[in-house]
Amino acid sequence: MIKVENLHKHFGGFHAVDGASLGIRPGSITGLIGPNGAGKTTLFNVIAGVLSPTSGRVTMDGEDITGLPPHVLFHKGLLRTFQIAHEFHSMTVRENLMMVPGGQSGEALWNTWFRRGRIAAEEHALREKADEVLAFLTIDHLADERAGNLSGGQKKLLELGRTMMVEAKVVFLDEVGAGVNRTLLNTIADAIERLNAERGYTFVVIEHDMDFIGRICEPVICMAEGKVLAEGTLDEIKADERVIEAYLGTGLKNKAAAGAQA
Ligand code: ADP
Ligand code: MG
Image 1 (tube, helix red, strand yellow):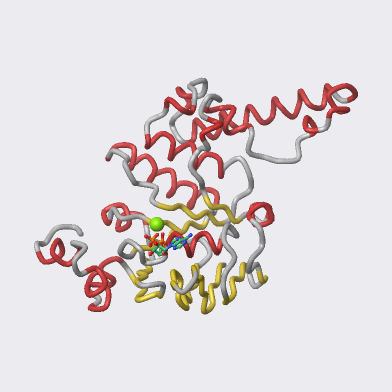
Image 2 (spheres, helix red, strand yellow; image 1 turned 30 degrees about the vertical axis):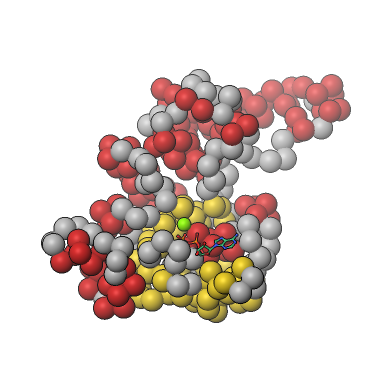
């Protein structure tokens, strides 16, 4: 579904992404792991159009999407989640969802005078959709809560919820589990699996929590120093010498050696 060919992103002389090539299979929940500074977030940002690549190519279903801006990719169903922006903290959870789809009639001033009925109908439909999404994510009790009052994990669910307000095909999640407690992390994992199974979303997930990766991701791709090192099941990846080498000093090898789920 997504193909990345020999992608480079340089910041000055620094090669954050240094010739990365990989493919994302449609219908997969692909994990992306690698030590800090491996270039994972930069790779996401280039694919999602937030950063333009120095060189290389990204295609989606065979179409060249290299360097297309985020809003164009958004309409093609390629989404990268972002933290709920600070200015949206004072809005409710439901309102945060209702804001996602663009192109509502309410945007044009004259519409508010001449087509009130249509706007009301659209708003009603949006509200229903938002409530459906909240129920799906099991946070419907938070609909009227201000987004700023949510816990870290609840915010992550809301970010995921925003992708459900449009017809997403492939969703990029960067460190969904960071700072999230175990219970909510399970809820997030469930939501990802259900979106994948029931709505056909393809996911690419960056996460440091290997239990989380092991539970929902296949395949797993490991990056280091801007390049793809290995791809396989998490067990294959954990047994790969190059991967162990890359993680040296960051704890994976020690944990693996100790028999922990690194
Ligand atoms: P990861 O997400 O795997 O931890 P990043 O993609 O965030 O890695 O970063 C890869 C490398 O690129 C890091 O060394 C980081 O300091 C560097 N980097 C990221 N963004 C920039 C930037 N805007 N300017 C300069 N260096 C950057
Ligand atoms: Mg990162």
